[in-house]
Image (cartoon, rainbow, N blue to C red; front, side, top):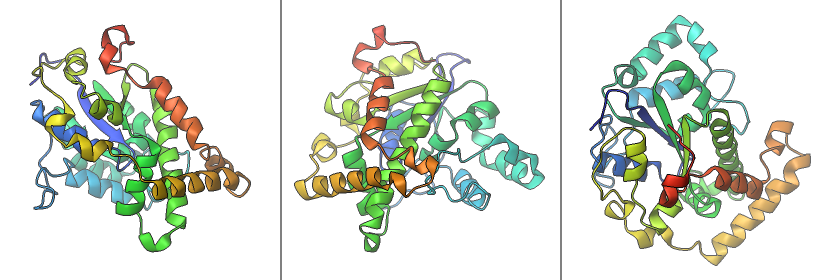
Length: 282
């Protein structure tokens, strides 16, 4: 549903468990095209909107010096210099073919939040939509669904640092590329049931008028408050992250202030309800 040939390809990124699949479902509901749902299953019939070759490309590059994508560091994951290797370049061309051929309108892959520079260097006319979710809810979801429970409390500290690493790259990417990166709060979109149609129109698309997350998810499920035990656990791990400054390498220590990164993200989040007064982002 492109309004013109100059509409950018949208890349949806964000920390895992931050609502990227939910937002991708909303874009697909709005009529935008994406890759096949390779990972759809009876428990998740909508699929994850992820491109399997791209997932495999990422897994392969975990063997490079940057390390696994879960390693806590301020270093980006993908770098253009990796493509100097002929085999990696071949994998890259196959994995990113839908983007190169512009056969889709958007691509969702959360981990690309760690590689904003790479994406914008390799492709023209791309706009990154970076999603963030409040850290307490993300923390609970990471610990219960992404990280091994038998590693508690280590998994709790890792969840804090993982969110902070993504927050760091999100803020850095938005500051380095203000015209090509838009930061959105998934909590605000759900809580206020805000339509994303004005944003899509600004980016060159012509969606319908009713493009709200309430059509894709139960609002009560998403916005329910984090229970007191989980909130206490979250606060304890946050304090542990702050206390670990003396123990962590310099780059990890810079990520320990969770509240600080939350304030920075809020400062650059696009206010969709007042889009007319917001800075142009595309």
